[in-house]
Image (cartoon, rainbow, N blue to C red; front, side):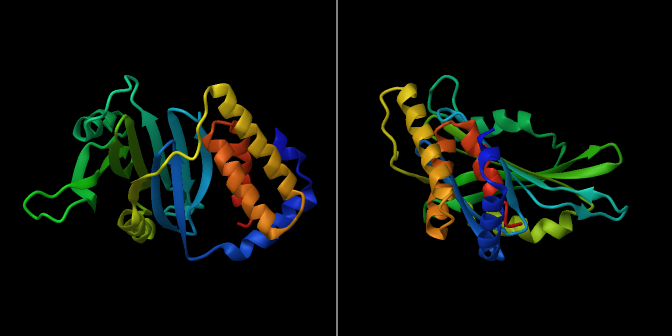
Length: 253
């Protein structure tokens, strides 16, 4: 894996310079093609896994470190975001997508339905970007809390699932309120124009190589640009760039 070729001393240097950048809350933005989500999370949450095929799917997995429950167990909450284009390439109905995507969750006891990101100012006919719900299900002796949120635009659907044991949920409840209160969808102009998938992968590899060269300079501004290039290369479908990006942004922890 290319990540292992980066010298250990360089990784230590990057870790040192990134450590002061950790704030009480961090703003995140994740995109696929022209579709973007932005949100805030407390810095106790971090991106542990990102995958993208550069065309139709993208997966982000955020987590915290282990939280102790009443039995002394380490419980790790998870927040997952999945971008997926319709298999039929047809525009998605937001309500049908919300119903059909419930196959990803296990909730049997729905506690509350909610909407996020109001799109109009007419009280008689409110329109929202996100459809959400929170509920629970049993896993042996444990009760598991899940938030389930969806949105659509054109042929793309986005599913967000937050999962946590009820025993430690009070420890992250405020975190979830920050996330839900800041969650926004926006559409961007595509930053890339490619005539073929081959051209797309060529550009992605160029970005990855450029990032590796910048990392070797040990200059803060160059390392910042390198992380942006790795993120772009990941979005274009290069798995090794996804791995490098996820590992590097967590070195300061």
